[in-house]
Each structure stands twice: as C-alpha cells, then as structure tokens.
Length: 437
Ligand SMILES: [Zn+2]
Image (cartoon, rainbow, N blue to C red; front, side, top):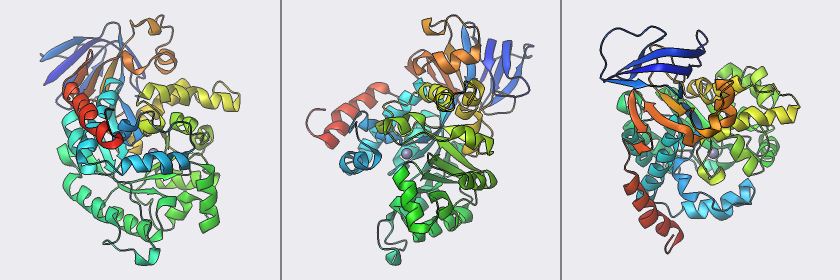
C-alpha cells in the first residue's frame, strides 16, 4: 500500500525540517518514503489532501496499564497506597482473561482515537494484551510488572509466578508482528518485590537483550522507605543488582535525586513523566526541568485510566508544558517544543524504538492528522502552540500506525467498537463489580 499526503502542514520533530508547509509526505508499506516540498514521482494507491489539518508523529505513551480502563473513575479521592490496597487490588483480583481482553480493547480504542501509535504497557495477563495490540495495529513494548511478596530466602522461579510469566511472555511474544510487539523485562516497583527478584530479572534481561520497565519514586513514602531499607533510592537500590544495564523506563521519578539522574543519563534510563496521574493521586510533581538539564531523556505517559480517567495524551502534553512553568515561575521552564519532544521522539527513545516518533524518510509511518478547522484550533498563529495548549484527543481525525490507517473520521478500521462495548458492559463490568454495571 502506498499513500501520498498532499498539502501537508506538519510538526515533524525532525531537526532538519521541524515545520513543514505545503509539503508532501509519502508512505510505502510500513515506512515513510519521502518528506519534502516537491511532489514525489510515481503513482499512489491513495492520495490524502491534508488541507485544514496538521500532521504530527503519533504519540508514544510510555507508561500505561491498559486493562485498567475498566477502573475508570473507581476509588477516586485517595492517595496511592489506600487507592491501591482498598480499591484497585481487590477489583483486579477478579479479572480474568476475558475481562482483560475487553478492557484492553476499550483502552486501545480510546488511545487510537486520540492519536497514540505506540505504548509501553505493564500489566498482568500480558499475552491477552499482546493479542489485542497485534490486531489493533499500534506498536507496544509489553511487560508484566514482576512482584514478589514472599520471604527473600524462599525465592525461586517456582515460588515467584512472575518469573514464569516473564519467560512465557518473552518466548511467545518478543518481536511478534515483525517487531510490532516487543517484550520488556519488568519489576513493578522496589516496594512490591525484593533483591532476589531484582537479580533474577536483571540477569534475564541481560541474557535476552530486554529493556526494563519499573515504577520509580512515585510517592514520597516509597522513596523514603527505600532509603530506610537500603540506604539507597529505589533506582540506585535496583542498580546494585544490574537492573538498568540495558536501559529502560523509570515511571514517575517524582522524588528522584541528582544522583539518580546521573545514573539514568549514564545508563539510558528514561523518566516516564505522568503529570496527570501524579497530580490526581496527590503524589507530587516530578522535577522535569532539572532532569532535562541533567541529560535525562524525559518522555510522557498517561499511567492507567484508573488514576488519569482518560488516555488522552493531549492532556499530558498540555500539563507537561504548563505545570513546571508554574512551579518554576518561568514561562519557559518547559517549552511547547520540549513537551512535544517528550510526547513523541523522546518516547520513542524511551522504548528503544528510534525508528519512530519523527516524520522523516525512512522512519516507521506512525503519524496522525489533527483537524485544525475545529473551533478550538482557530485561529492558528502558531501550530505548535495550538497543538500543545489548545488541541485535545477528539481533534484527531486520522491515526496511521506502521503505515496502515487504523482510525479515520471517527471510524475504527482494526477494532470492532460495538463488540468491545458489549464485552465491557455485558461481561467485564458485571464480573468485576457485580450486577448490572
Ligand atoms: Zn503505573
């Protein structure tokens, strides 16, 4: 399939030509074939006139728990620990494969409709998620978030189910769909496991060339408890066991320190900034400008819908661009461009997928069109200002993932939304919450 986009206005994230006007972008198969102001030669299977629209790379959502879409708005008004222990964990205990499939379908629909083309997800029953993602068409780094609550001296692959889950996930799904699915090694967090799992997961990651995905210093108590237990911050405690040797994603990083940032910059560990979730749970505000100055790659995530209430990446894009300005009393503490980088090219780097996040020839064709004729995007004095501060997910009118149009003008081309709704409302919600949901 070849597609030519004409009359393109684009924010490319390519330093060589960051903003395109009256341009042409052609796509061949899964790749962007050309980007420029001259119409490329040849014929195309489809020509898309982009007048009135703005193209940008698809969003890379670098920290999600996609089946938690089923928990939207559940257990609001609590801090992280009571929210998890009193609401989320009891509800999750009732999940089965069919619930996870339904919640994943719903979450994917919401993400695709709001412009996400690539995710890093951490959740249980991960093979079910992988199948749904494969069919939906976006790219994903998937992980199962290893936990171990047993006595450290009793740890073994037999006593820790997540070791077996990690093995099965890697063997069945790593590089499935010609790399559409990749598997990351994963530890849920310092406070939900102990050293034997960290060592096992680090060794496993190194043996199989996997990256790592861990919740890090999300709350003050998590950070302080790690210091009390180990004399080290969570990221440094894990580092002693080799957890970060292949780089990866440290989600949240709200209480990380300059020493943590030096480690992250040196080892290629990206901070997945989840501003909406951190604010809603009252966790705090990650020191993003300082992390950027320290050379840390900062990306954006929505976190689970249970602590965000949506997966609209424009919400986090906007928050990332305004929140730190208020904290620093500096309107340029994080610029609109920096926020766009976090949402796209930095996210690609966080996932180890440097083939995406940029509109340039040779890159994977992960791109979206935003309707700039919508009332909230008129007038347009500055395309980037409008994208960051004015747009929202419902302004997305096309989502192309891996060269395939998967969503256009409100229609899903790879998902059956009616079937997903029926599964969520007819099966998953009654199964988890009882009665008619
Ligand atoms: Zn999370």
